Length: 405
Ligand code: PLP
Image (cartoon, helix red, strand yellow):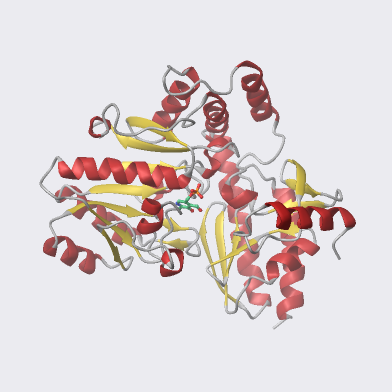
């Protein structure tokens, strides 16, 4: 039963806001501490979702909060008409933790996709007339603006919004023969865009052999490789970026979500030969990479790049995989547990959406995506103790749902 406070919040939502987020869970978080959230009635929850893999340092972490306070007290925004030390610093750090290249800051994941598309097309056009086509893969998710939505190979995301942006082709993932045939037939391809672990698509990890072959063919044929690291980037999978698990180096990575720990930001990082294809005046944003967002990103990157930090992601991730595989032996409806680091999907044999409010009732925040996949993406600095506490709740819920086999 919703409390009086919650009822008022829900009524205000209906009265004042678009109802495009039809499935809001019946809770309003008002504060957090480490990997715990507190609702309007001061009830405590273990957070296994971190606001869709965004609150990478959890809530109220000292060094991060201090960096933000300092920045708010000095300057939040000045615009890209001027030089910006915080942007320089965040760009320097990104260079250090990925590959030699340069960074362009934007405001969100979908805008990172847009920037990557624009860059790829400018590059393509300079390497042969009409090389504009971009290949993406079935079930991908790259955003909700027109470029991002078109790059997203999911019909349900497109429905009712046509005509979409021309020049995109969708291929099945993990099939190098189909890819090879496509680029032989059509010489107009300038780039591929791929999530190495599809997030919204249900934590689907790409096949390593396929990824290596894909990159080899792209490099050979002058096709840019764009890896969408919006969900997987900045430590989520136990390395700084997911591509580092696959033995490849992309030409462009896109990122957003966890990069600034909750302050809106997006970015592309591209190899040094690419920035010249977006010269002065070809792309830009008012807010992109403002002082506050970049101070937040620098504070996050400084923590995440530490060995001990990523070791925690891998250790707690390992704990989750063991515990969940153990649990799958006790309940009958877990089909598969997959993912890397703290980017984990539990595929069920039945729809999982109704488990989300049931978990909330017990004090645990989880998410369901792709209909049957429960996603576990806690803050990256979650302790083993808190992970265990949340797992206990999840186990109780799953046992109630499925019973012992
Ligand atoms: N790319 C991927 C892989 C994502 O998971 C998302 C969002 O979920 C996006 C792009 C779009 O990011 P945003 O919602 O910040 O626009």
